[in-house]
Amino acid sequence: MNCDVVRISIKQCCVDQSIVGIGDFGGPDSIAWGINDSGVVVGEADNAASVRRAFAYSGGMMNDLGTLGGPAAGARAINNDGDITGYAGIADGSPRAFRLSGGVMQNLGTLPSTIELYSFGHAINAHEAVAGTSSVGEFGQPEPPIHGFVTKGNALVDIGTFGGHVSEAFGINDHGKVVGTAETGTGFHDRNAFIWFKGVMLDIGHLGGGYAVAYDINNRNQVVGFASGAGSNQGFLWQMGKMVAIETLIEPAEAWTITDARAINEKQQIAGTGCRAGACQAVRLDPVP
Image (tube, rainbow, N blue to C red; front, side, top):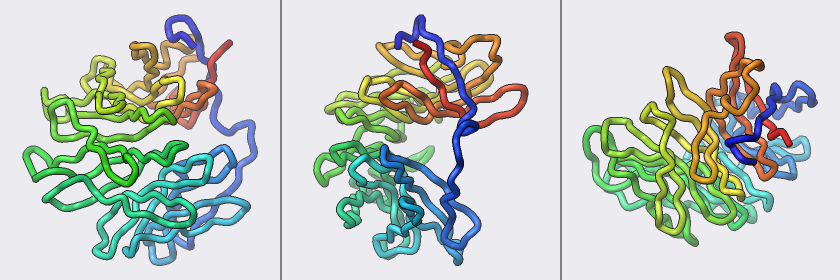
């Protein structure tokens, strides 16, 4: 798909499909975060004591994935082999990124840090590599430092930043390319989206507003996310060195505004949020042949 010439069609998500209620653990809320090609859904749900728990849903059953000794947990992503990542509380209650494989939940730890320790797993690829976010270093103003990480075996590799205190990693493809957002150091909360691969952090920029977050990357190296623009957030597609606002690829007569893009698959379909006539909803964006 060439972002210079190809248009995108848009569908209101799920209007032409049946809806399956996943349920909860007796509490008021549940959230689905990830799904694999077998239809296994992972996420987090409150139990009767209003404590958040990680779940995997398949075959009509919602299974509690447990914790690392603490009370709470949440699952964020699952690969096609059924390996899961997310966060789980340890004995003192602080969260740790985990990788669950073969029924065993592994504590991935944190990056070296002297401040409050925590980490979160956000994405996992076919090779069980996890991308996420961790506390790091020593406390510094104007905010505590956190860095994105990717696992190499059982070790966490610090992705770094563009000069600021903060980076976060949200997506990883099967080639090991990681995407997320990183502070530039030019101003508080100025962030650019990035692609990281084998120690090299590529700045893929923003849409003019000084802030961009990349959420997902497919095996074609197409990246999606959102960026601040002219007065509002805009979902973006980056490929072949160019970032464009997705709504510029949709026929203007459709009058859609795409405020974010959260995922892209190998068919180049994009999941995100679209707004039209004052109403916003989940949408699926399909490339037009």
